[in-house]
Each structure stands twice: as structure tokens, then as C-alpha cells.
Image 1 (cartoon, helix red, strand yellow):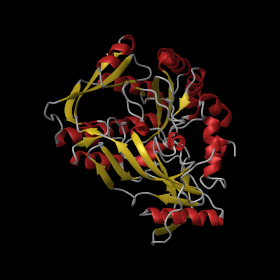
Image 2: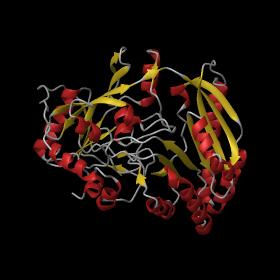
Image 3: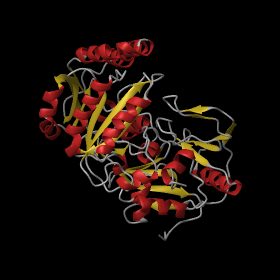
Image 4: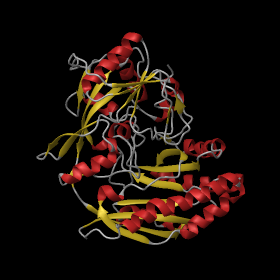
Length: 450
């Protein structure tokens, strides 16, 4: 494949912060490394110079946003580029409703920036600490059958490849690269800028309630049709779920004061941490604790601006696996997970999170060309998770599952190529943009068989 309009970045170098042999770990604490150097870049010139330096020295390079992936995407013993100083708004195009931002901009900050301009993202996931480039590159998503993942909101981006060339990508300029780069695992190059399609700022009415699992499954089609955003959590060893529904409203914000925030952020997280530590120390408590959490789910509702309602505070740390399955298989998958959990009596008390999304045409998106359901399983940090995850993963794979790139999975090149129709095309493009494998670490080499 020949790309047509690559540009050499401007010459010049500006000092950046550099740290040697500083230990790094991801949010969950399971992925750790000691990079030879960690660089805090502040502009595109610095970024281009880092790439040129690593290419000349034949050393690897990885980029970290917020470290919220559960896979070793960032892990490196060579150069780690930190994007924390590479944040902020570049431009707002009011006529077209687009916003261009630097790649390291955190989703929480981005929500407030857009809100100041009367804008919002059309949908978000339930975590807002990630950088926009990290969220896009790993296929981060929210829930709602009208909406694909966050990468689908990207209408343009700038990518610097392994040869130091800068690419402007959208549906007109380098359209194939655009379809590959929006979910790229950082394997094609480093995204420096992202242009997002936004919508006018809107408020949501959030409602939460407890329901029987069988009732939820029986009413699933109605829930998905009647609600803008719908998801549910099933508590293992119980027959109860927590439903979460959100719909647009013109009502004034309610139930959002400091007392409510203190309850959500401090009391609920602290109480769940105590229960989780109890399960870690006495694993036999897992099933009773899961049933207790299910019983404690109460009715709740509030109204607020959209970007302030999507995210849920997560102070209790865990390991996570999430797969995308065709929506028509969702009920069978849930039933088999329910059965294997009961049969093998896994020591787990975290609920399963079930979300739904629209298809898209992004090459490595788990939602590529199919109506989808996402199912996420979690295990409290420092509790054994491998046996549980592998048993559930086997069910996902039986039903054409595709892994979320930022969550644990065991797949390598052969099985991934079977699940992603554009896998080989992506890999060919990757070799063209990064012939030295500058952006490959051990994890990515396993995925791409390099």
C-alpha cells in the first residue's frame, strides 16, 4: 500500500523533561516495567525528535496516557513517552461542530473544556481518567445501541509514524490509514492531535434500580429500544442485577450536591474496599458478599450534564477482561457464564458489566461491522484471576468474541486474524509505517507475530 502525502516534521528541538530508570506500573498494578528513560514531551517537535532518536539508536518506544489499560500495551525497557504535558484545546470549529485537541488531553478535562463552549461528546464510557489518544487507540466505548466507540467520534487525526513522517488523516486524506489509525494500539505511530465531532451540550436523567436477572433478559429488547444509554451489572451467585438507564432531558440538574458526591466517591468505594479485602483474606466470603452487594442495590436517580454522569468513581482497584460478542449471542453467553460460575465456584464477588453498542467500520474495532454486546468481568486486585478469566474467555471465543484491546486477553496473531477481517491489511500498513518495529514491545510482537 502506498501512502501519498506524508510530510517530514519541522526541524528543531526544545528541551523536555527526562527521567532515567523510573519504575512504572499501570492503574491495576499488574503491569510493571523500568524504562531506560521516561520523557515528558510538550509539543510535536519534541515528539518527532524522540522518534528520530529512537530510530537512530534502534531502540523501542512506547507511549503512555493514563496507564489505564490492563494489558502490557505500554510496558517497555526502552523509551516511554508520557503525554501528561501534552494536553489542551487547539481549536473549535463552530460551523462544523468539531474540536481539535492534543493527544494527551484527559477525558475528564475534555468534558469541561467542551462544556465551556456549549458542546459535548455524544457518548462516553464509565471511566474518564484516560487520555483521548489512549481511549481512542484501545477501542474504549460506552453503552447505547445508537453509538459506536469513542474512536467513531474522531473525524481527523495527526499521526507521526516510525520514519518520522507526519500524516493528516480523515475520510478524504489517507482514508485507509484513517480507518486503521483510530484503533491502532499505538502500533502505527504516535497520535499527536485528535479532531472530534461534537454535539450541543445536553443533560441526562440517570436512573438505577434492582431487578431479577431473568426479568432483565426478558425485557432486554425493550430496555435497549426505550433508553438512550442502557447497561446492567449482574452479581455472581445471585439472581439480581443493577439496571442503569440514561435519557436526555431538559430538567435542571438535581441530586448532585457534595453529600451525594461524598456518598458515591468515599462511602460506597470505601465500603466496597472493606468487603473486597474481606474476600481476599477469606475467599469463602465471595459468594455471600456478591449476594449482599446485589441486595443493597437501591433505587437512585439524578440529572446532570452528560459528561458529569457517564463516569463512575473507581477507587477499588481490580484486574479486568472484556470481550465484544455479536448481540444475537448475548443471552447464550450470559447463561453459560452463569452456569460455569456456579459449577466451578470461582472466588469472585465483582459484578459482570454488560453494555451494548452500534457497529462501525474501523479496522481493529471490536465492533467492526456487527451489532454488539460487551461483557466485562473483574477480579479484585491481589486475588487469583487467571483461572476465572480463562474459563469465561473460552465462552467468549466460542461465540465469536473479540477482545477489548485495553483489557486482559490471551489471543495472539492466528486467532486475532480469524476475528478481524482487516487484520492482515492492518499488519501490512503497520510494516510500511514502522519498518523497524520501533513501536513494538513484547506484547505487540506476540499479537503481530513479529
